[in-house]
Length: 372
Image (cartoon, rainbow, N blue to C red; front, side, top):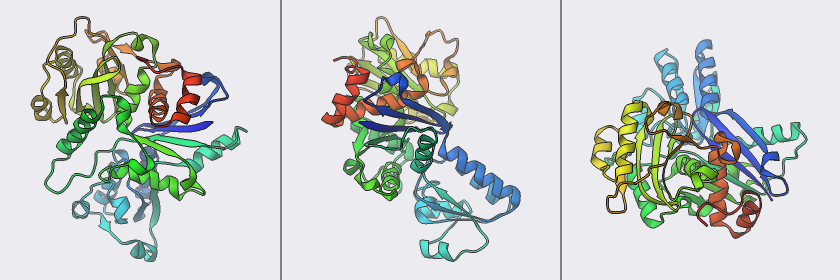
């Protein structure tokens, strides 16, 4: 069984072609620029040439691509976007128009002339297949697992930050297992528009609809993958945090089960501020209001407040340097010897939790999950 696992971030997309017939160390691994970073470069190239833009495709991650599009508008050049592509910038299309982007129908887009067409999507399977073939690895894929950060499409008048955290809380209340943040193709909630767009991208591939696929949120995938690090796994109680480029999500775990969490915007945090929130998660005293008032998403404790006697903190993610030299002495998780693939390992574990056939193949190479 070959499972293509792709963890799509803001800076990189981390790719693992898991092959049950090979040791995990011999499986193909790629760390490539993220789709939003590549799209941003294409937009900036169009800006340098003074060419109007047409953005089509599907909803994808923003960040660098959003900033580049706004710079294009500010430079005085036109940006057109089809509705699905436009939702990359805001779920409210009136809000997109307010940014200076002209939303056009698919039919109107076909009639535009003299524009640079840039197609938005988080998943570039054709590029991965080309790379595999170039190295003689073959491009057979039996299943796919993809992680992206999905803020969720909040209804009008519903705070994006509150909507996101309400979603996190609802999922953990449904199941304290981190695999609760993963979905098979037909299970994806309607509000998770970015996950659904990834599934649509797979379906658009030749024979794509035939591939079983699992979709998951990025930070829970990275934390779940971190539990494969033996040092993390040996602690029954732990704080495990993914310090991402945009978001920091920290879980308080007991035997691999979530008993508390908080999510914040990484860019709003200094190292000292992150330490302070982690201190409160360790003590069991963190509150939703204080995180939200600090421009974060929120916090939740599911157990009666209790301080951890011997707190163990493990961190992963591209901004983990924020805690460099911290008095909390964080452990840098390296599951199967590779921090960059923590999300991919988490995707495999989540897929194994959702599919018995995958479970046998994954545990054959990765061993049983932590806590079993």
